[in-house]
Amino acid sequence: MLKRRYPRMLDQFLETEAKGGALLFAAALLAFLWANTPLAFLYFGLREVPMGFRLGAFFLEKPLLLWVNDLLMALFFLLVGLELKRELLAGELRDPRRAGLAVGAALGGMLVPAALYLFLNPRGPELRGWGVPMATDIAFALGVLALVPKVPLGLKLFLTALAIVDDLGAVLVIALFYTGGLEVAYLLSAALTLALAFLLNRGGVWRLWPYLLLGLPLWYFVLKSGLHATLAGILLAMAIPLRRARPFRGETEAEDPEAIEGELEALEEEVGEAQSPLHRLEQALHPWVAYGVLPVFAFFNAGVALGGLQVGSVAWGVALGLLLGKPLGILLFSWLALRLGLGTLPEGVGLGAILGVGFLAGIGFTMALFIAGLAFTEGMLDQAKVGVLAGSLVAGSIGYGLVRTSLERRGR
Image 1 (tube, rainbow, N blue to C red):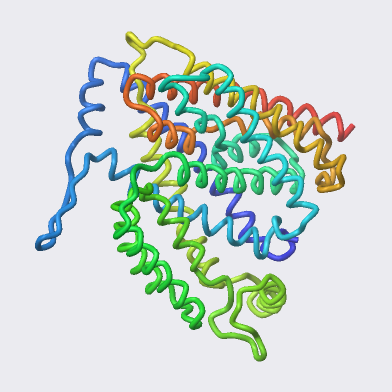
Image 2: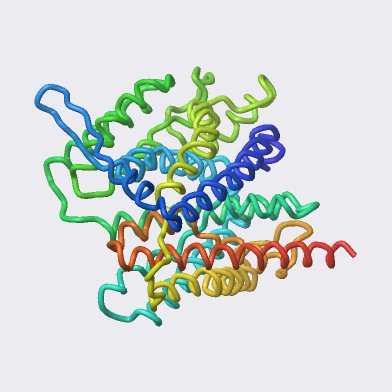
């Protein structure tokens, strides 16, 4: 369905994610190598450089690392929200049979790694890291999958949908379990700002700049409310319209899936490609996030000095959660979804390829490092980073081999 409707957009999405994954890896490798040289003090000093601005009585200052993690990553979460809304209302997740398999696989890919981590870290401050191995890095995973020749489109869409649902799960985990004490006044201010954005949507405002202007105070209010500031990106994405600038005659203002379906089909005939406000923002934002935000995030967060580091249960819990928990959970819950009739396998794909994709989903990286930064301070944070890097590297290598072998056997 998505390939028929958005051929160019889908190809651009997959290509951008694949190239962005390579750049992400290069940035992470540079940070890791720099952090283990005699000049490591420059790397760690750069992360702590204070930056801020003043506007009258208003003043905000943070270390450079937190500007990257709180502000730049809000753009990443905005993109995740746009992708999620598109998939739910007009993409793969709208089809119950296709969504059933992806949602089931993502659920297993979150629960089993978390359970495995908790088995190895049942108590103490280490317990806070249970959310780290739950996440999938869509850029890295699609980048590795792009190296496999003749991958069926359905398998690419399955991995994409799985990763998007996975990201939604990670967002909920961050919102519910990795927030501080809530400030009611700022929380109400954020709610009013978001309500104004939805009023613009309901009022038929299709230009993007009013929504983006509201995004700035929304980010600030969420930052001060006690929730993590990046959640503002997800919230704002839900208010961006997924419909045409000029409504069709007789069209309802509500963003119901049936109206969107007919709208996009008519638009495909007219201009050959969807150009709703949501799609325009997603297409404009995607390269900036893939080639800019995520590599910068990787550079500032992947550096860990190995000298004197003791690898303990946190590192093992994260690494094994990604390497074993992810593929086992995805395969088991995919099999259950198929047995219960809740989903269907993509054309030309068997359970062997699903297991391979499960290992590719074990490339946690971006979101895993992000959650690790919320869960731990320096000592355990370094352990978690080592677990993320090691588990992701091995899982990605195994996933590549399994997917390629499975598809070659099925082809013969």
